[in-house]
Amino acid sequence: MSRVLPRVSQLLTVIMLVVASALVNDKPARASDIHAYSYVYTQANAWAQTGLLVYRADSDVTITAPNCSSSPTLGTGDVVYQSAWMYTQDFSFTTWFELGTGHRASSCRFWFWGYGDTSGWHPYGWQFISTYDSHTFDFYRINGNWSFYIDSSNVWNLTSTWSGTEVLTGLETYESTATAPATHYGVASAASTKLQYTVAEGPWGPWPNGTDNAPTAPLCGRWATNPVDWIAGENTTC
Image 1 (cartoon, rainbow, N blue to C red):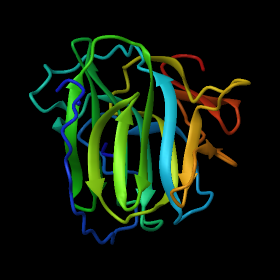
Image 2 (image 1 turned 90 degrees about the vertical axis):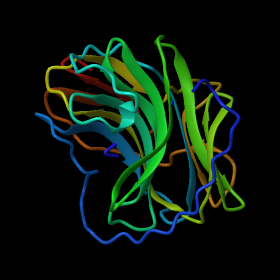
Image 3 (image 1 turned 180 degrees about the vertical axis):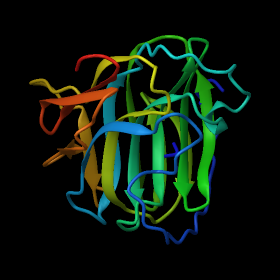
Image 4 (image 1 turned 90 degrees about the horizontal axis):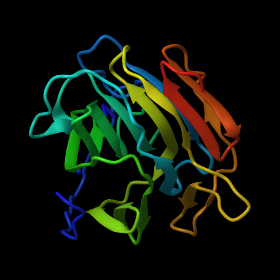
């Protein structure tokens, strides 16, 4: 963020007219003692990326934070995100789609989805969660319509002709004392590859290459299998 209602069938449509103007490398930071990432990305087929899929667990993050607000995705500081996002339009890194899991406290964990632009983060939905199961998080464009899914549940839809220049996934923290166990982002096996993307509204396929951001303490990260399985954590060993 700075870069979730029970699973719903309600469709939300947004016409997005945004011009990216500022040059930044990361999404806008919130008030906190840290803003750091452990992530991987690919710019393969930039300007033609039309989907991102990540299979991972919702981690049991330990974090001490204020009580959860009625709109947890809009709070400030003291939060850890497990996220999948796509930068769009160009390489200014100021417009993006995002889908993931937020952690503010043991009683405040939530899925969220929305988009960001030069005016800030625009959440379009969230859902509290209480378990640490594995899920597929994906969003993709077909005929100019973007659909966002958690497993088989369609949580959000919007209309936009935007295409991606970079797809990313990993861990984002605003709390230096939080503990996030080492978690796989994408899992490869003989039967499946769970870190995928689409190009020009085509079929899902594995990333052709992957680059990591070389995270530093308190975050850690390493490739289990490059480019389809990244392990990320905070205040732990990856």
